[in-house]
Length: 400
Ligand code: UD1
Ligand code: UDP
Image 1 (cartoon, protein in one colour):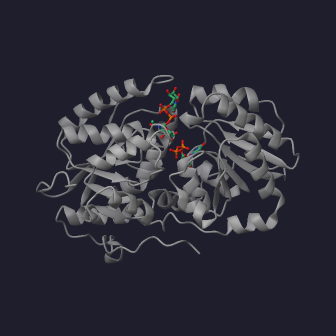
Image 2 (image 1 turned 45 degrees about the horizontal axis):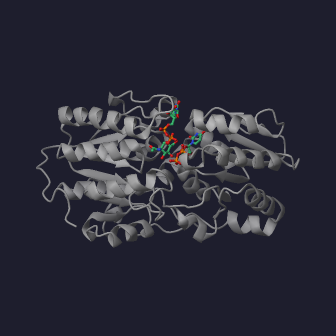
Image 3 (image 1 turned 90 degrees about the horizontal axis):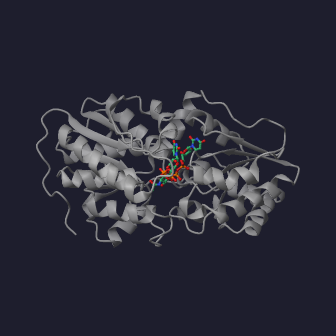
């Protein structure tokens, strides 16, 4: 498959890169790119927020350290995917048409990312995809993210794959080798940066019991399946030696499923979504993670926290293969058994806690900038050292 577009425009002076983001994880994972661009003389980051998420987006924007140039306000309560998609394509088309950036950068597999890529294509602006090449191989799981990322893969000119496996997926689909770059995941850059700042506070109350950090939100789990998972987790709390902390996603569908099952139990603390510094500190403070989140599957191994993935598929098998995470599924008894085993078997716990992090070395954003600079024909500036210049950049290696 040929690259689109084959020729890049002449860029006099700075490269104007529009970062389109609308949900919590997109801010977290594009923040290192925005910060690095703002610090360079070569790039001008143009941040556009879509408002696909409202409170959870605004809670994160400070991480960017770049003010948004434009903002849409597309979120509706219990939004339907088709309507959200339509609002986003129209709104982003107008923003890109008026601004004419040199490229558009999207991240991951949200509706914002898909529509950002599509609107850029319609305006003939080249697209860079950060966190490209993740696949479960099951088109509707996760829903609709697996389709979204495959479609973005058809549109993008730059495919920044977080791991060698993700790069392999892209090549197997016919993406030209010259457009696939293994960078590591920018989530590791951000996590290390935020922990280094040292401003977050753990949200665990500190009862001396084992600390279980829980998050659930995926659309394919909502409804009765999520309610049953909630009941299982309540039973886990009844062991007496654990406390469970649940920073609850704002989605009403998630709240409908989990609040009736998990409120009013002495061992389960349900709190509002945490700001990123506090979430990072909470993750660093926990013993065990139970989650269906993508980003948390990447962050937890970076901090040596054994992770049970409460999904039937994962596009991040690297953590499972490394031994840092286990794919448990959504069956209540399986969840209880797996959590019990980890809590009761110190050797198993130790094995998972020391398995290492396969998702990067904290320099992914540097590699993204260096590649873009090279392709726009610019000298790679000081600070983007030759050691990180792709495609000769080293594959990210597991941390010790
Ligand atoms: C979206 C992404 C998913 C990502 C998740 C991160 C898509 C298709 N899915 O799913 O990949 O893992 O974000 O959290 O893009 N809401 C609020 N306030 C907020 C955020 C959400 O009230 O700050 C409510 C709204 O009622 C909204 C609903 O949550 O309608 C669902 O939000 P939406 O972005 O459609 O889907 P997510 O499940 O959050
Ligand atoms: N996160 C956060 N506060 C919270 C819960 C999660 O900052 O209360 C962060 C977490 O560190 C991770 C990201 O949000 O980086 C994951 O977002 P989410 O699970 O909503 O989306 P996904 O990664 O599944 O797309």
